[in-house]
Amino acid sequence: MDAGDDTEARQGHPISSDAWEKREMREALAGRDISAVYRNLRKEGISQRQIAALTGQSQSEVSEILKGRQVMAYDVLARIADGLGVPRGYMGLAYDEATEIQVVGAADEQQAEEDESVKRRNFLAHAAQVTMGAAILGSSPRAWAASPARTPAPGHIGMTDVRQVEAATRALRALDYQYGGGFCRDAVVAQLSWGQQMLDSSAASPVRSRLFVALADLHSLAGWTSFDSGLMDSARGHFANALELAKQGDNDHLVANILYRMGRVYLHQEAPNDALKLFQLGQIAAQESGSELAISVLAANQAWAYAMMGNEDQSLKLLGLAKDEFARANVAEAEDWVKFFNETDVYAMIGTVHTVLARGVDTKHTQFAIPALTRAIDAYGEDMQRSKVFNQAALATNHLIDGDIDHGARIGRLALESADGIKSARVKDRMVPMQEEAAKRRNNPDARDLNERISSFFAA
View 1 (cartoon, rainbow, N blue to C red):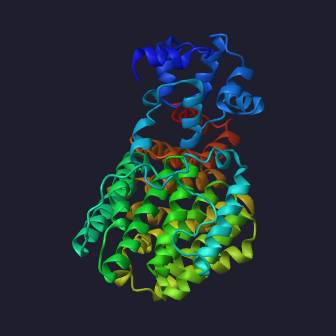
View 2 (view 1 turned 90 degrees about the horizontal axis):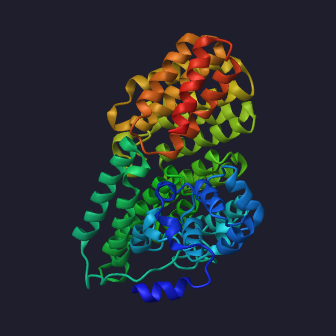
View 3 (view 1 turned 30 degrees about the vertical axis):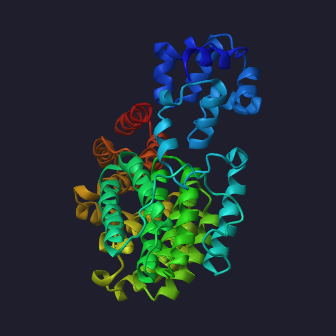
């Protein structure tokens, strides 16, 4: 579009293109800080009613955003940019649009506006349909994703091509563990844009079956890194595609793993009931796969969900099952995508579950959480920095609950230092319990200092 076309296109638009060139506005756009964008527009004389009309949002939504509510979903950000007339590149949206292949449902604006509980129910229904064998590839009742134009696909693929996808997935997953999903998500999505087109290539039956599984795993990683970056709708779309591909590849083991990961998304959203249903579906797939390690993972996460629901008996029962199944599992011969769950992660899960119970049911659970979390932290290497931070924050939380405030504050400071450089939206969220416990004890100088440090970290 030349300058003349642009001028014509903007005739009658209430927002001047010059508004986007001001330094404060460019900084807000670059950070995808929609609250700041809307505040700057108000300074330009644009009313809440006008913003709502241009973006397709309700005035109450615009009001909430002005008060600080974050906007994370890619498709909503894209619609806001297009409605306001923001050059997409100013918000870092152009790259995603060019490379995402069957990922975020960028064209499904109505879905983006659905209540989150409705989205969870829709995904759960889809997951149940796929897991129980009623759905096949491409049979999803809703369009989970947009389908931008693809680059030409290779005419024929062999096992070497599939192995390249698998190798790339392993390398990208290692980056996610160490540096966070924000560090590598774009690379994962770009890899999908290449791998996905192989579905149109001719291949021998064993190659095609393995391709389904490889792409399912790559979509699962894309879902996980999207979740870790705070892009929930994108995560949901990836996991939906991953489920169908894993089922098409007849891989119950991977189906179990995908359901576990989506369940974790719902735990993070504090929807343990919905998370539990996904974990239970995953348990069915895990049992079909015959993997004790997969069963252990699903049982541990069910324990977490029950703990969040305040059901101490069921939580401890499932935690016991997780430990028993892990003891029976052959980790060395397990599938690649479940090997992450080693002895260190078992201790981390034990500590996590008891931390939730200590905060919501009975403080006595700190006596079980503290040694388990300590053992996990000591065992984590630099390649698992994000997990180490999560566990340090939980350990600090337990010491604060126990009244060992100076020790809890010291570990809390270590967690903040360890979090430096990790690009993960979840890091801040997992520090909220630590801040809440520190705030309760703000009369203590160590707790007050920790609370202030966490607030500064959140504001950074």
